[in-house]
Length: 227
Length: 336
Image (spheres, one colour):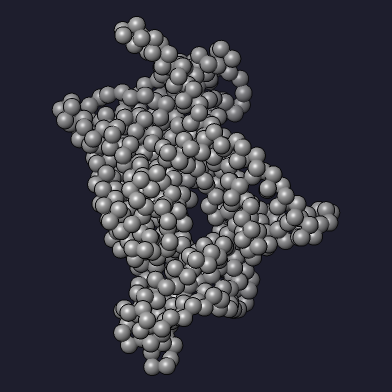
């Protein structure tokens, strides 16, 4: 037993190099953006990504490389798919370890700032008239603002601009409607909509223009059915 | 190759005072406490982390962690038990009670809670999860802890622990910055987009704390363009800070950059930009405890002796209190 212990003690420093090396490799490889993010069709369809590709196509044009945004987009998408496949191969030996011990990586933050944001708006129908109940950053419609301004709620709502997932939006709309119906007994209906607009560049803001948007994904609920 | 291996063995065998990692443990515990506590205080734990079948907002199915699956999925009673347990564990991590077992369980319970709903996971969740795993490996309750008081009769006994967990935490935070910089492929981060990224970030309603329309004024736009370029370059180049440690461990070798690193503590510049960046984020955007946990990782950039010197406002010596003590690198000298 003592001999075994001695052998283990001698081997431990070498084993430690292997284990730490494995962890280092896991950090490095898993920090590369995953294929899921690169191959998300909704991401490629988003106004933001299309704007990025158009911007790069224009920049290439200025240095004499003529390419349309569509051609560039197709090439970038192919390259991203290949990159994603290689990344998955590299990541395979580490994924289980990272998930088990909590060494997951994934650090794409503000990778492409949102230029076409979407806001969740909630309205109440009282006496046949619609009244705004909640608008982000609007003191006149600040129902449950503290709740909606929690960072996790912000993250959840912010996703609708980038990758709209219908079941998530429907879940949110129904939950909002249920809460509003319970809190406002005088309300006859609740309406949840997504207000999407293009953020104005600085010059247009300085010229006094205001962003103009449109409503999407309207969901209406009869209050009585939710109580 | 044999020499490199021996160097690695020697490097990972290093030990150092335990109080640096203990400070980091306290910071991580507080961030965990805030992360779970703020959700519970807002009543959102039962909204986001519980399945629609039990009154939650979304159909979460079984969650994205083995523990939550083993407990039967994100049902109301499961989350109702895990959230208070998570808060208790965060408290124990902060005060350093329960040794490695608590650190291990805290990491698993934290992940089980936040991965109940993977749609609202943030970068800070990953940083907290990574930190708890390394703190467990390090046995980070050796000092500044209830454990130390019970076992050694002192809150702050002079004990040493392995140094390699701190090296891993340095790599972790530098990998975060560099890969987040490399992920910033949106055209506004580049000259082609006029380095306009931060302007757009501040206009987005999702994260900003208040109206940032004033940033459209010409002088503000210029400041934001400089800040965008600085942020992007700083993030991408963060990983090169590892060179600083290498150069400081091998001061006898030639090279201008090495000489500069030996003469000047470039970490302080890195930390100054990082703190300014995170302070700006804290003031203008609501991204949860991301800035707090990121800055907490900065503690690991310094050897515990250096942290003491900083606390006493003494200058940091090049070599003698080298943070990573990487003098085992071939050709390097022992700084002590």
